[in-house]
Image 1 (cartoon, rainbow, N blue to C red):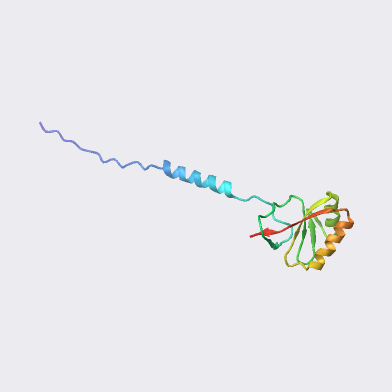
Image 2: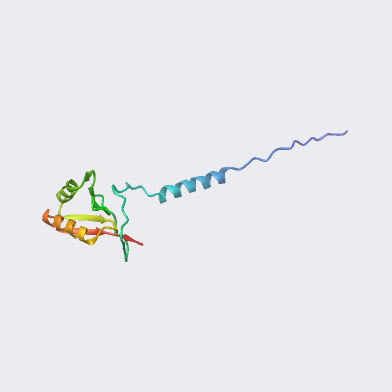
Length: 125
């Protein structure tokens, strides 16, 4: 008696579980390392400072290279008045290309408006 054994060739199953794990790990990595922040209203190039960088305040007065002021949605003299109305302490983000005499004028105007504590925000390299 002769038995004929026909072996069927089974195609090996592809294991995709490790690939799915890698994709999920990459997804989690990119979600955790992404920076979600609103862009500043004026394109600034901040001066650099030695030491650790300061955190940006949610309400900061921006001073552009041409002397343009911005505070939230307010621009120009309205921005100065809105920033002064926020309280006595204020973060000031100034472009590195702004002349110091213009900065001094803005600081004097802030002092006249009642702002007593101005923190100049710089970029740490």
